[in-house]
Image (cartoon, rainbow, N blue to C red):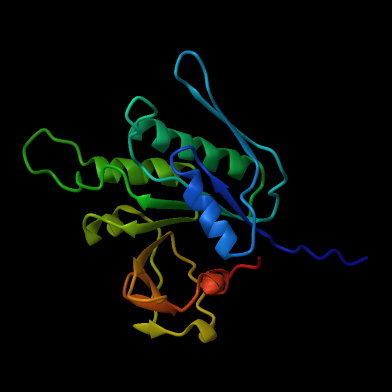
Length: 207
C-alpha cells in the first residue's frame, strides 16, 4: 500500500491583527485556521490549535504593535513565539512567521555603551522555536537579515513566478509595488508576483 503525504497550507492569526489574516486568506481562497488564544489572570499567554496541522506548511500572522489599554508589543511577540512552538510540537512540516512590523527593529546596533541589540535578541528567540522562515514587510535596516544564522538563498538577481522560485530561506522581505505587482526580495533575489493567488506557488507551497 502506497501512502501519499499531501502537504497543506494553513494560515493562523495572532491577536494583534486578525482582520489582516482574514483578508490574506480570502485572497488565497482559504480560511483562517482555528486556534484558541487566552491570557491567564497572571498575564501569561496560552495557545492551542483546534485542527490538525501535521505535515503542513503553516503561516502565523502577527504584527508587533501595542494596543492602547490592551495587549502590548511584548505580549504579541511572546504569543507568536508560543504559537510557533506549539506548531513544531504538533508536527508541522514547515512554519513561517509573518511579521508585517518586526518589533524592536530600531534597536539593530549599539549607539551607546551598555545598550542591548534587541533586534538580534528577537531573532534568536524566533530561531529557538525552530521557525523555518520570517516574513516581514519592512525592516528598519537590511542588516537585520544577518541576525538569522541560517543561510540565505543564493541565486540569480531576478526570477519569474513561472520559474517556480522555491524560497528555502529563513527570512523573506515583501515589498509592495505600484498597482497589483508585488516583489518578494530574498537577499539579492527578487520574485515578481502579479496577484496574491500566486504567492503559494512562489513560496513552493500547495494550497
